[in-house]
Image 1: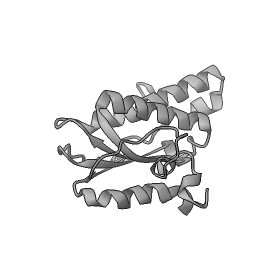
Image 2 (image 1 turned 45 degrees about the horizontal axis):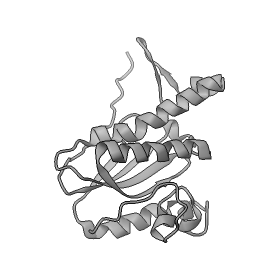
Image 3 (image 1 turned 60 degrees about the horizontal axis):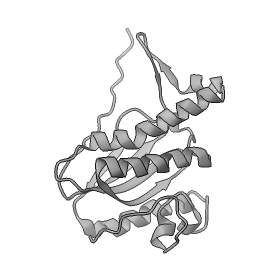
Image 4 (image 1 turned 30 degrees about the vertical axis):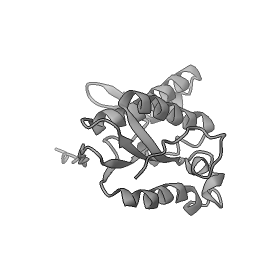
Length: 186
């Protein structure tokens, strides 16, 4: 009998007034977000989730194989599971629809996990990803700088503002950005 695999669990605290620094990654670390099409799916999901789940969006970056988001729930009673689902599910659904409509059978097979009783399409790694509560709002500028620095550290661009798929341009005053951030007094 094979040993049972232990799945890492994600701890989350839904504390009113806390910002959340989220990281969620693509299945098997694959660069599934390396095309503008898939990056736009993430932007669309953020836009919709912000409205439906009622949070302020403070910063984000979309990297080829993961996403960082810094958000602040507006409601005193919220559940991060629903927010994460609203951020991730639409992207996975859009990817699956696209792969089916373009007959990309190899990718569908690569992203499908077969269990004895069912098959599951996996765009994202299982679980909630990384969720860190930020209860000291004075730390927000440092987190935003870290988020925006991802593409620079990876050598994708020389300055954070050159990476279109982050909020760095917005915070530098650019008008033509994929999604506007919420200006929140910390």
